[in-house]
Structure formats: structure tokens, C-alpha cells
Image (cartoon, rainbow over all chains, first blue to last red; front, side, top):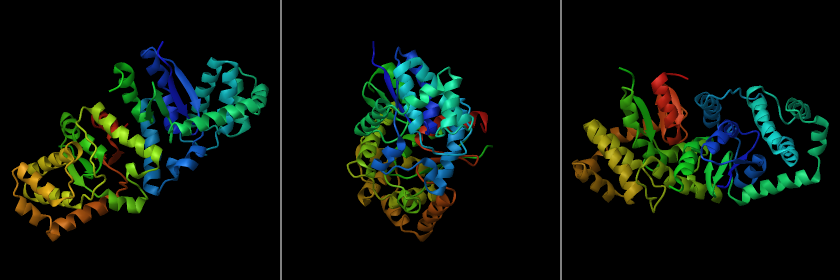
Length: 201
Length: 201
């Protein structure tokens, strides 16, 4: 069995959302699974001098705001730019990890639901009520989830993942590793597909 | 007749080189021509705070160095990263513009030859001898070219183009405009193709 594709993401990254809608189908077509790994761009940017795309100088910021929506239409994915952007995704990432420790499939359902809630329904994932509603929507217990994201093991797991992403050179999201080869950005999915189909090129 | 696709480039931009190898074929398939327009990233970056990709913090710089070559292989375009990078492209851009004032087809031949010389044969386009050799190779008169790039009209034309690119929000290269719609980057060629095929999406 070939190793899983690693999909590093941040819940506040538009291109992570777009890629998250396709990565499992791409993986499956090549006999692979996806290992979803949250990281925190806020922490990464402090080490790499990165800046959220909409906080760049005006011509870049407005280009990216436009590109998010055009790229979503190009990909056939619903998109409505969130009224609060970017947001803190610490709790959403911990929620994903806590769910993962309970039930892998449920965690993946949470991931997709959370991305869609933020990027197409303007639900601010940094607010506890939003996570409660998401939990309820996928059949998880909101009270258990709210407790779960405070568990030291969950906090440590997220910290370890962020550290790992930085150590491995991740500087933006999504970042996809296929057998150790790193691809940054939704727009590298065609190269990911080629790599899966042919091996190293 | 539909309006030409505008292709804004800098001779020191790897992704401009990659896109330059495909843009005319894409345009032709949709009944369009290409208007090649040089700009100067060095000037643009002073207004947008941009940085050459290989001068970013180490994890980004090494990712891009790798991505240039992988993207070239993906596109089937020969690539050898230049030993001097980036370079001043003022004279190469002026050479293109002077040739364009003489013979449009010759200028386009120069453009492709110059990009290939820099990005696959390690010829440093900032050196006068390199431009001489390129001119001779495409059947232009090196002496006339050397004189041409000093003409005030040519210098003014380049300055006007750089100013225009900045005024229109260009912050990197290649930047492609299709009927006013702006696309940044070699990796947006699939969206350019869709736009040409379907109109606005």
C-alpha cells in the first residue's frame, strides 16, 4: 500500500479549502488515502515573514481577493469570502484533532463541513458557537467537543504538528507531500496528479 | 477580431519564460494574438515591497528554486537555473522594444531566443556581449541594436510600459490580461484558457 498523501492546511486558508474539496478524489484515483494535518499559518508566518494574502499591499490584496473567487468558480466550488478574514483557527484545528482521536471519518466530515461553513456560509470558526453548531451538524457531541479541545494532549498534538510543518519547510497552505515531495498551493494539484501517476518527474 | 492577449513579462522571471513558451499557441487556439509587453520587476518590487523568489527566507527560496525546475519539467520546457539570478533586464527589454519598432516578428523571435538563452543556456542577458550574440543569432544587426537600445524613444517607451504596468496593478510576472481580466502567474494559464474559451466565468 502506497503511503498516504499528506495534506497540510489551515482552516483560514482559501486555497486550502479549494484543494480540500478535490484531494481525496485525486488520491483515490491513484490508490492513495489522505492524511489531513492542520497547521497554523499565524505561527508559520512569524517564522517566515509571511503575510495573509489580503493584508499585502493594495494591488496584491485586491488581486488575491478576486482570485479566491475566480479560482473557486474555476474549480466549481461554492465560495463567499468571509466577512471576518483571516481568523484564529486554533480551536477549529484542535476540534479536528480531538475528533480524529475519537473517530477518523468523523474528523474528516468535520473538516469539510468547517471549511464550507467558513468559506461559503460566512460562519466564523473562531467563535465557540460556530464549533458547537458544526459538531451538532455532524452528529458529534458539542459539549464533549468543547471539553476535548481543552485537553492537554490535543493542545500538544497541534503544537507538535505546527512545529513539524515548520521543520519540514512549510511556509503556506495548502502544502501537500507525496512520498516526501512538497507541493505548495491549490494550483499545484495538476503537478501532484502527475507525480501520483508517473512517480518523480 | 478579438483583442490581443497582453503578456507582461520580465526577462529575469522564470515563470514568464515558462508561460512565454505556451501563450501564443493558447492564443492561436482561440483566434487571438499576443501583445508582448516588457516590464521591470525591480522597479515594480520597489513600489509593492516584492522580493525575488530566491531572495525570500530560506524555506521559500529553496522551494521556489525547486519549483522552477519541476514546473519546467511539468511543462516540457528545457530549464537550467541561471548561475547569475536575478539580473538587470533593462537592456534586454529595450532591445526587444527597439526590435519591435523595426520588425514585430523579429522582436518576438528575439524574445523567445533571449528567454531560452538565459533560462536554459546560462547566458547572462545583462551583458552586452550576450545581446550582441542574440542579435546576430536571429539575423539582426548587433551594432544597430546596441545603438537602438540607447535611443531616447526606446528608453521612454520602456519607462511608459513600466509605469503602465504599475498603474494597472501588475505586481509580478508573467501577468496576462484577457479583455481586461488580469491573471498572475504561469499557473493561471488553465484559467486563461477557460476565459478565452467561455468568456467571463
